[in-house]
Length: 72
Image (cartoon, rainbow, N blue to C red; front, top):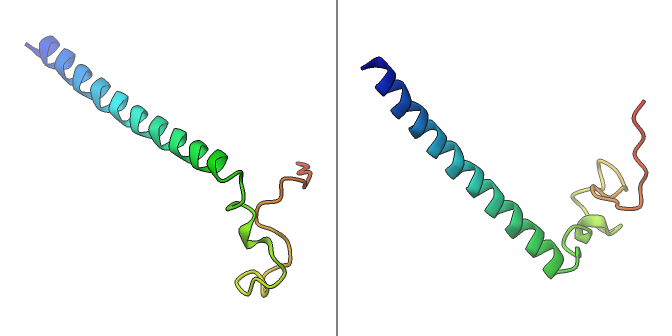
């Protein structure tokens, strides 16, 4: 009886995991589609010098595709 219960529990957890994985994959595809659809302009939109939200913190873009990141 315990073995049968374990099999059903494993099946249920596997189905939930597969459903979550599918949702994440769909979200990723939507994000990639939106980014390619507007050619990445939304990613670089807050990079203007006149941006008041970034002025107190820094003059750098939060997302700069030309910046080289080096790990120490």
